Amino acid sequence: MIFRAREFEFQFPRPAILMGVVNVTPDSFSDGGAFYDPQATVEHALRLEAEGAEIIDIGGESTRPNATPVSEPEELRRVLPVIEGLVGRLKVPISIDTQKPAVARAALEAGASIINDIAANRTDPLMWHVASSTGAGYVAMHMQGTPATMQVNPSYEDVSREVCVFFDERMSKLAEAGVLRERVVLDVGIGFGKTIEHNLELLRHLKAFRRFERPLLLGVSRKSFLGRITGGADVAGRLPAALACVCWAVQQGVQIVRTHDVVETLNAVRTTERLLAG
Image (cartoon, rainbow, N blue to C red; front, side, top):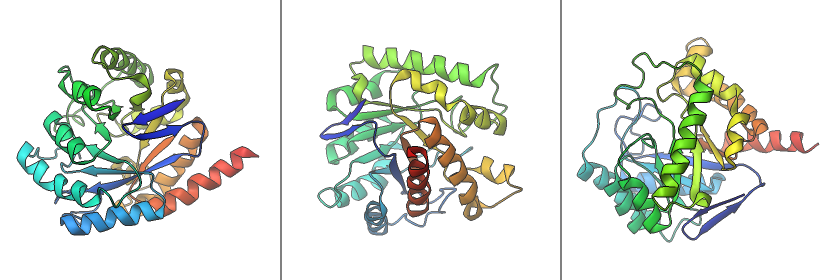
């Protein structure tokens, strides 16, 4: 299995890839705007690469529950200086975490190679045409609702089955839009329109998504459901629970892990892989 994103190529099976999270937002739940300054953000991204991240994921709009949407010009103002500051310095691909096709296109023109789209539940194909016309990699994430509504009583009859149906539909839609299969990554969307039990059910059944023969991306880093299942741990205290989920996910066949904590996650993942190798 191959994942291609413009000039970059990853061949599987191989050790799991870490996607390092870089937020250029003043209201991120995970870092509280610590890297809102473009220069600080550039240095942070370079540090994550040095620690072992093989993809750098840059986002300029918070997608936490009830987050306030930002305008297209504001999102561009946040992310473009960072991407431009990293091009030529990073050796790994840049991913743009955005729901807006115009932001994705501008980021790709500036040097990004992957679109990380939490709104893959969209009906408008414009984002997919951006991915197709540029040769970008595309992460299709499942979300019920929008960030503003997703945690208002999320409901499923069978969450794993329904996410599988969603991926079937998305793969067809992406093909219709000209996005090659080898450029697609799938993300079950932990915490995006799911209760704690929905999240746990998806984690238990990650193997079910291997039938799509596409890399699976998992994002559990610092998420609030981890605090709830561990007795109320704050953001900083959620790392052990996140690492437990990541190690489990690697055993189930997840190939890409999105994380804020690259060193700790890399150590946990590589140890898990050594144990699985026998």
